[in-house]
Length: 606
Image (cartoon, rainbow, N blue to C red; front, side, top):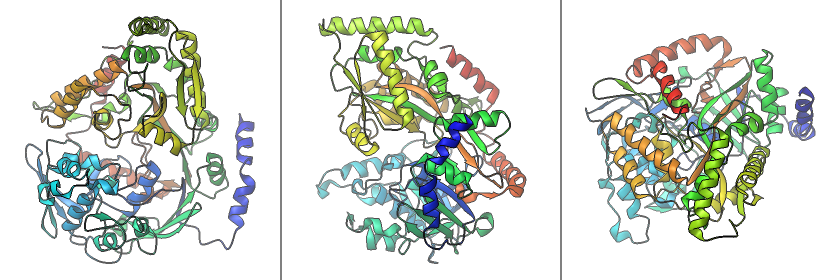
């Protein structure tokens, strides 16, 4: 296996050495990590995890995520209050909050930024996160057409700048994870004069120049860092924001992002010392590194469960996949345990349901009686049955489908569409073999570039297509909201009135216990109707030079790279973080023993 790793490292050697040798080398940054070339650094439009990482260094919201616990903590807002129902919030902004050009950052900048996100023309992929704010969804929906006469006024959105340092927010319903949301880049402020010059003016998107406002020569940020250089498909350079209100909390003087989409080049850059952090190593390299780590020979390799699920979308509007019996047959015929153990082999958990159970301990809530409660996943399709019984049940559903369709010739060929990564091909080939051998259905494989595949999924131009979802905040709703009928992330053509009612009711339910019950009932419908076929819950990995610390192997997979610290500061950082976390999360931290009981019940199908 070491020979495999060595061979993979040699592949991009010449290209990297050439890259290193071009021109005069600038002074090495304090910290260097790899990431794909970002499509944008506009905090309102980023959606990929690597983009979010960079945006979090450049922009900061009312709250931010602790680098080790990823719990929300004060940021631009130094404090806040909410009423007993959690419907109205008052945020008190720091008086020393500044933009990177030295101008004051005030509450009105947040209000204007959030209104920009709520304009569909801006194409903020996470605009729906703001729908927890009273009037926000109506404001957004009123702007979907080209008729300005029915647009809701800005005053109808529950955000008000009472003065320069006070922001009032009125929610449409209780939201126990609201402080998590305010740390997300979509909720970050943007500098109004810069936006009005290049990107958005008088309610109109300036399409010809909107990309220019996040270029180094124009970008005005409020985070710990500012953008100093952006060399397309080569690197980005971040340097400290001289006006950041808490410079003592930031160790790195500069950060470089070495941009590459080639995991082999990223690994070689790490092994040769070019970079300090690289993430998302693929098979078979990740398996070799994991084995070395378990043998005690690779202490710089980190791997763990993630709040993420790999699944296949099913086009529920395209016959014969519009029949839930056929979709049930396809799901039951998948040997998830075999895929996790032999196709992947990195300790992945088979996905019997959609919401990742490993995050349950971090999603604790308080009941009205003051007890700690946890989300309880529903009983899955085929729960508690060995794979052989699942296959027999799959054939029963297939027979029911064929009898109802009066189709003696059987099911037409089903196409699986996936992106060109080796992992995706291996999983698709496994499903092909399972569906053909268990159900006798011919399966065709179609590899497509990521952008083409994304367009096909968006246009419902597919049969079955690979997908991933990483939770944006620690709550089951981040997984379940997306399959409402009109949600932009649904992309299956599936619609279920009772599912919509349950998810909508959960959004306004103040009783956390009842809210979790509603969400679990909705997930049970999702599992029974099978618009998606969950396969496994993801694990993530990264390599980090041992001279650095302050980065957590957390289920949310957000590496807070701009708060990296030297290794000698690890213990101090960890102790301080633990104390802060205990103070902030005394009523939210999970009882892990109780959560483990829930996981056992879930595995047994109870």
